[in-house]
Amino acid sequence: MKLKTCLSAIPDHRRAQGRMYDLGHVLLFSVMAVLSGATSYRKIERYIAAHRERLNDLCGLHWKRAPAHNSIRYALLGLDAKDLETAFRCHAAELDGERDQLACIAMDGKTLRGSFDHFQDREAAQVLSALATDSTLVLGHIWMTDDDGDKNHEIQAAQQLVAALGLSDRLFTLDALHTQKKPLSS
Image 1: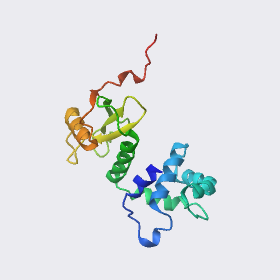
Image 2 (image 1 turned 135 degrees about the vertical axis):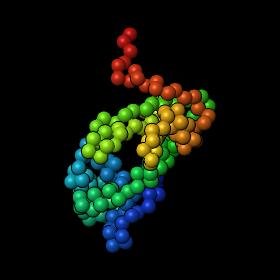
Image 3 (image 1 turned 90 degrees about the horizontal axis):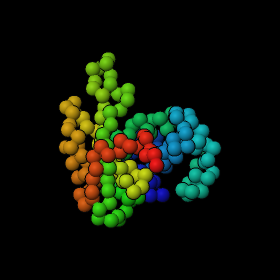
Image 4 (image 1 turned 180 degrees about the vertical axis):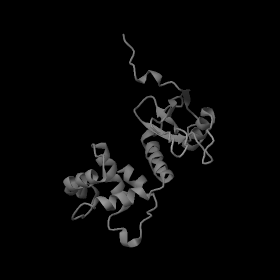
C-alpha cells in the first residue's frame, strides 16, 4: 500500500460534494485497472465494479458500488501532472531503497511519437527517463521542453533529474539503453 500513501498526498481538486470516493483510492484503483488492460474510463469503472469486494477488503473500504465513469474522468482530468509525477517519484524512491554506492542509473531521452502538432505549430515532446539498471524500475521522467517552449539540452535535463531524484551518489550512463530492442546474440 506504499503507492496508496504516495497517491494520497495529491491534493483533491474536487468540490466537497463531489468527494463520495477518496481520490487516493480512485487513483490507486485506476492504476491497477490500467495495468490490467483498461483503456477507457468505462473499462476502469468495470474493473472496479468487478473487483469491488476484493478492493474493499484490501483497503478497508465499504464501497457499495464502483464510481461512475464520469466521476473517474472528472477525478483524473483535474489532476496536476506535476503532483502525479511527484507521487510516482515518491513511490519509486521507496521501491529503490538503499543500494550500493555505485548502483548504476541509465538515462535515456526519447521523442514521443505523434506528439508533433501541425495545427497548433507545437514541437514534438521530448522526455528524459532515469531507469535503475539492476531492476525494472523507472525512477522518474523530466520533460526536455521548458514552459516557454525552448528545448533544453539533454545534459542539462539529466542534471535537473539527478538533483530532483537525489541520486548524486550513483554511476550514470546516458543513452545507454539503445540495445534494449535487440538482445545480444551469444
